[in-house]
Each structure stands twice: as C-alpha cells, then as structure tokens.
Image 1: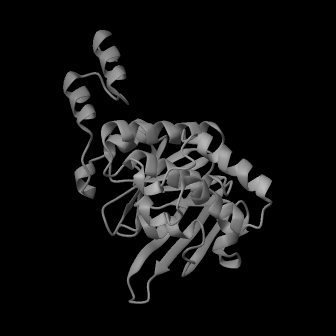
Image 2 (image 1 turned 30 degrees about the vertical axis):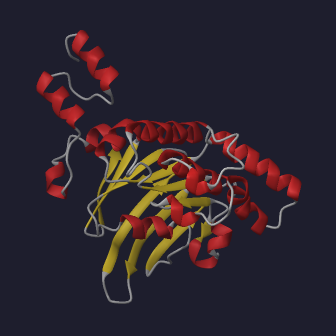
Length: 263
C-alpha cells in the first residue's frame, strides 16, 4: 500500500506545489488528473522518492520515502516518463531492458530471465536485437514499461502513456496496462486524456491548485462539473447523456444500452 499523509511540497522559489494531500492506493488502476500546474507530477515524484516531503509523510509498503534512496524505492515503484525516448540510451532492446537489473548486480542468468519476462509482458518478444529508436510510438512506450518492469516493481507510475500515439498504438498500451494490473500491479496513470480515464480507470484523483479536489469512482467523477477544473467530459458520455442511457465506459456499452432502451 502507498500512503500519503498531509503531504506539502514547497519548491525553492517558494511555490506551494502540494497542500495537505492525503492519498493511498493499492492494487488498482488510478487516474491522476488536473490542469497543468495542479501538482500531478510533483505528487507522482514523491511516490518513488524523486522528491521528499516539505511536510507530511509518504510510505511505500511501510517504507518512509524520507529514509530511503530513489534506487531502493525504485524496486517498489517504477516510473515511466512521458517521453519514452528520454529513457533510452542502449544500442538494442535487450540491452535497454537489461540495464536496470544489471545495475542491481544480478547474475547474467537472472538478468536474461528478467528481460525475457518483461518483454513477454508487453508483447515485444522477438524485438531483442532491434534499435529502440526504430520502434513505433506504441512500441517505444511498451519498451519503456518493460525497462521498468525488469526491476520487478509492485507499483507503476505512467506519465501520459498515450500522448501522441495513434489509436492502434494507444490500444496496445491500454491492453498492456490492463494485463499488468491483472497480474497484481498497482498502476497510477497521469493523464489529460479523459477518454483514457473513462476507458481504463477504476478510480480518479483530481488535483486543483495543489489540493485534492476529488478522490473516488470514475462514474462519480464524470458526474461533476468538469469545466470548473478546466477539463472536458468525453464525447461518448455527452452522447450517452443526450440519448438518456446514463453512464457507459465504451462504445459497445453504449450500443448495448441503446438496444436495451436505456438503463
């Protein structure tokens, strides 16, 4: 369990980025949303120790992040940044995924086992000898996830995982996230994409001006006046509301609801 208690973060310039945040998550898919500058990335960087609290506390499976290094915490919380290319510097996919485990001082047999497992988890088996920069956008995103998975973290933070991807690539990333969740990973998705929130999230945490404005089920989140927070309701929900069929998560649910005469 990740626990955040009365978390404040003040940057050196005096800006209060987080103000009294309480938050916890376990094995679930949580969407972290809010406008630019709301504190999303600042909060996420506290979960693996990249930032330390100005006030309050963050615990990851009982470990106080103030007392442990990023390297120690990365074994529990993996962070996939928004631009996956910023994570790549090896000449082929195998070496890229092996980099983290090798720095843990593991045996070559264990490193290879972890690389094979991580590539299989994201459906990139057979890509071992490819150059990372030759991959498609969706493949690069899945490779970035594999690099983090090879460290065997319990929790994953994915920063804007579908930004800039076409529909097919986005679908492949979404499938990967669902698969990882089904295998026991808790996943925090930072996103501006309300369609992705609707499709994927079990729970939504909304930050506004450094404070937590909402924390609850996705259906309840989309019943809010999102315009007040600079967010837009997905087109699918606007259609379902006009049709009088209520809350739906995807097009098949909408079609079923329309065929059934509403809910």
